[in-house]
Image (cartoon, rainbow, N blue to C red):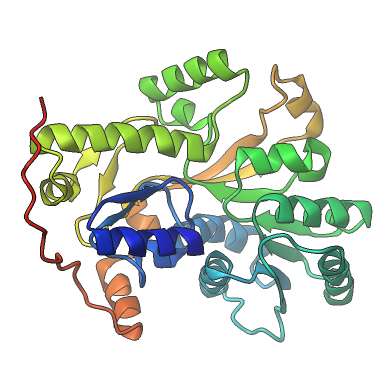
Length: 329
């Protein structure tokens, strides 16, 4: 996410559009958001919202502990989960920050010691990619995994595959899309995408793969509606536009350029079920879903964050350089 924010700032200065396929920090379209960034995927706030519904139903009042990737996504994820699960008290619900990326063997040992000392009912593992995989493998090897409910916000298919089905079994997480989503949202195009992707690559598409696919088609559609590649016209064509591709309807919000969409809570399936799948990638059972209007921040909440960060409450355009318009042929 910090890379996406930095790249987005370069694009702002050069006045060109930037779409990131995988940036889950709330800041990307929040305190760091601007006119030239659009985010198709979800972020830490709706991830916490959909998971909090499940967690508060099953684990309200239980002791939580947090393992946090020490950078923008980890920080915004922790803040959101603490807010929505009433675990703001850091003495009652302690946390441990781990450098990101590339945790060391010493970091893994710190995690194990922390978990043994705190003995939580719920362990929030707010880590990504290989770091998350190493943490869960270490917890499993130490015999700690089955002593608590592990929550991994913003799961991806590759993370589940990397850690292995035995390690991931029973872990709960969230995501904006998985290859089962077209079935529960009755998306014919989504089913077609999954089928053709599997035929071509002998595996299922991931969340970020689906996002990349969607972004290309959405940019193409916006250029066609604008009748031009001119950045200002394309931005206007995107803002407020509703689309439906690989699941149910999504909408590009005009004021923060976030794609508002249904989000899902998932539980990792038993290892024996995963291994029976033709690619051994049937990893997730969708256990809950939440509409975009309920899951994502409201304009009032977004305004409050912008004011706190001393940022403007609208994406005012920079002066456009004088360039010849390039029509679409």
